[in-house]
Length: 294
Ligand code: ATR
Image 1 (cartoon, protein in one colour):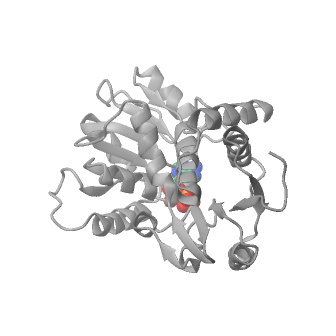
Image 2 (cartoon, protein in one colour):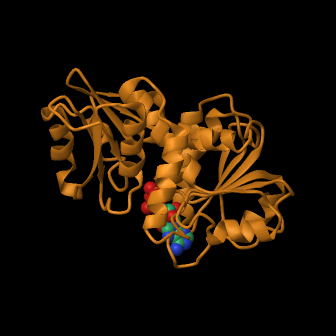
Image 3 (tube, rainbow, N blue to C red):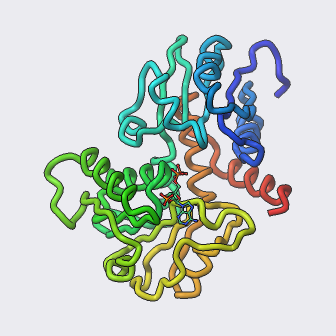
């Protein structure tokens, strides 16, 4: 559809944004659905975030996505925040409604939708997460919402795992049985092998494995029970060293592209009240990755 005076504007606020797949996915979706909208990636330096968010309101944009490193910084700039975004401490989707800014977090639902698409139900299963940053927080929150537990947080810097587990325990609320569904605990990297036999899910929530560096945050998957699903949030390359090591141990694996696609589909619900076209997003993302030389 041609851009005209009624075209709705959506933008990505991030730094950097040069390799983002979101413009390719959303613009393909707009084309497919005949929606008069346009999605652009904007590289916003950290000191300019507040001005960029104010600009959404001034320009009467329809909305935005927010990515690294701005997801936490934009939260206090919203007029209203969804309970999930509040609990995650991060906003990845903004809708401008009658001049008011509504902040939501579709990373959490996107992760769960990706698990569901792979036929995996985390309810009542133990989950071991590597990483204690924003990505780990969103994944852990989603797993707790879906009834998983215990959720163990293993991180290079143990103190950050302790902090995150504490914050999540508060978010999970009272009445959580210690060591059962809904329970969250920090885990020293040296203790991973001890806990592995009780895990049904193991997730890399760090950026280790991104690009051509060929590293994995964990290499020995021999202690995980057969059928434990290994998930990497990294989607480029599609089979990361983490997933490669899990495959070698005979475990089923899931890459990060599904989460990316499903968070985008859920962002449409926030902006337009309808879910975005998942198949179109997968195809556009894969085309963009191939063009990237990935
Ligand atoms: P995000 O919001 O994407 O999660 P972040 O908050 O910077 O980003 O968190 C990055 C995570 O990846 C952290 O858990 C970090 O571990 P530290 O807390 O010890 O820094 C982890 N990470 C990054 N590089 C790593 C590496 N080379 N080895 C192990 N963990 C790494």
